[in-house]
Image (cartoon, rainbow, N blue to C red; front, top):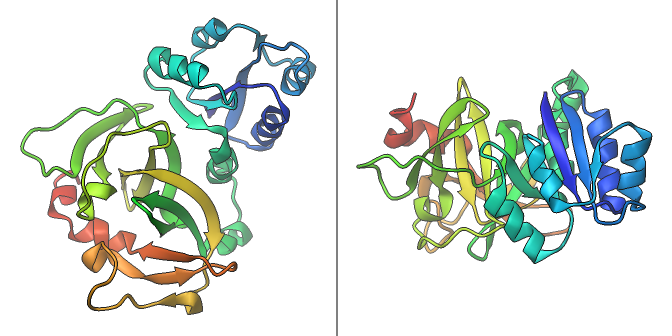
Length: 261
């Protein structure tokens, strides 16, 4: 069970409250908006969920995930600065994907629908895709404990709700220059076998379907970054092109990752 806080009481907040209610593993802890008559505030009252009109009230609640729907840069900055350790701050745009992953009561038919679904994300100016079946959750960049004498792409370990696992900066792993993290930077938590690992990406986009017949082998020369970890070039229903990552190859063949087994 994870708890959710919502900052911003508009229609987006109502939608997230609805998803929380439908998700067996989630519980709404509070809604915050300066306008007590905002739609999500009214909905929270109706369902007995605590509300607050002051941003300071947010920090009185311990939550696992905090969705910022305020659209206010100063609010975002304050949330980053004062958020309790262990709380992930994410953009509300990721809510739909997060809750689709959190439903632990998924039946066999649902699993079939995930077979050809991919999470897309951005590194530099390129869009990449990894199979949704490997994705456990998406969080903001938490506090990272750095480990000496590791490659530059291995940023260290994080403690996410009592689970400690390594995090890799995919931008650096794929040979691009390192950059400062922003409020759009995310950690995609991958579950492979009996271990977890975090992929730091520039920006998460959406969940899409890419059918096997729409994935072409990558070119041998002058192609995309990623070396042997690129499974192919995939096209979605709208004709968009994504670089499909072979997660198994990336995790199995990386000697540094194996040291955390």
